[in-house]
Image 1: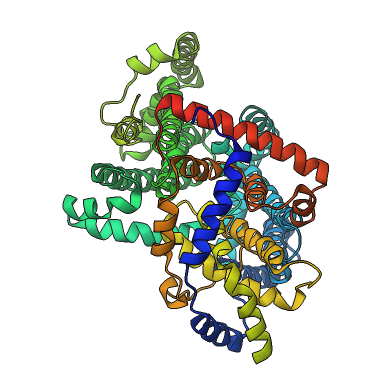
Image 2: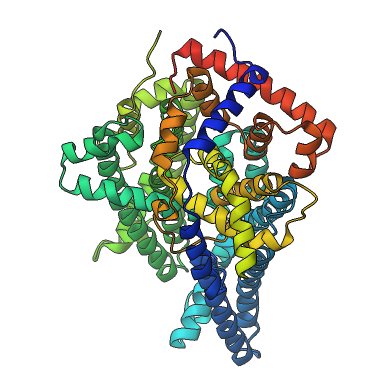
Length: 427
Length: 173
């Protein structure tokens, strides 16, 4: 057939339906028994995560309320707690609305009407995720201070140097308009791409149900892969539309590496956080600590995001779609590595400063005047600008020159994974 | 209650293939269909008291089943936590699959292409293929008749385009 004629196929479809009706059995007695068994319980089971979120959120809000009452005469903790409480309350409201909507959803209503309810819920969760992301840096230290005060009675807000909180809040407030601008640019550029919509679905949390199913399938493969038994995996391949067993094994190795990388980066982020808190009053130390801190975050976030995407990836999708998704992941991963490479002179200098403050007995930097510090920072910054200019001129040449042979960030391994996906047969 | 059960099951029996076809259209993996079909049956039963007998049961069934299918994969559905193997429902999906797989190459290609459409378009094309007129589809989906006609025309063009592109790249079903 040279083309697809839907009207011509309509008759064929209905003939096939007739054959299906004749050939498909349904045990009415069994269905009856199931209906009675379920009706007797008369409970609607929502996703457990939603119920847990509401219960946990309620407990948190009550605890925070008690804390705010106790600290009602301390304006610093009152403001910090109130800011945190606003976010918690917003999330709690979104969860409760979702619970109510799912409890009353009427599947007999027209499809578009039902889907518009679900779309509104999704939009509310995306808005919440957006504002949590935008305010995370601003609220991070005040949040930690509230938790530490509530749990241990330690007053971090007055115990640490004021510059720690001032820097965190100041940077956070600067990042809000920047973050909004980035989000607008990204939405305008990628808004209609299926990959972007899938990522939004994950952010909105609507993939939890899908994750449950994915986990069941993955468990079967993991059990076979745990013994590196290729033959067992081959036996399961039929359910995975001819995806090679080697692909699953490669994916498993990559997931492990990304998990190790994530832990290492997270450990570094926490250590640098502690370093920044302790050295808050020393400008050079704080600046260097923040630089390395953000450099580690710039590696941690892509590692977590890539791992999460690989975990959720459905390997029963068409091969071309799988290749495209893995290629996209590798591209973003590579961009993160290249951005770090561009900033590597400045990051290296910052690392030297942090090390000088951390290593016992090494206090060379404390003897340097600000002039020496700037004299070191200027060439490092110029080198970063030069690297950025080279990248702008030719990203491919830059990538070739800065390929990391044993990178934990795994962009090369993503390319290898993509190459394991069968190519479409030509002809 | 017993009469309601009997009436519901009597109405469901002749249209059981609807469950299979919608599950097939919305599930990427065959092993997911059992859970989805059970959810459809449960939601149909819950919604049965609201069944307006002025329309055909198949129309009611299509609307509910499509809504459940779309919601199921958006993760928004009320989930059944303790589904049983679909064989305990007496539904032999393997037998249905044999009928399905015996269809011509064109229908198999059509099934694959339908799987690439978005949720609403998938619902529209399924109802269209089932023989519903655009005037009947419109209230089921909640769009105007004009909107349905326009979207179906666009779906036809898209399916033709995707079919030609797959043929050019040697993509098989």
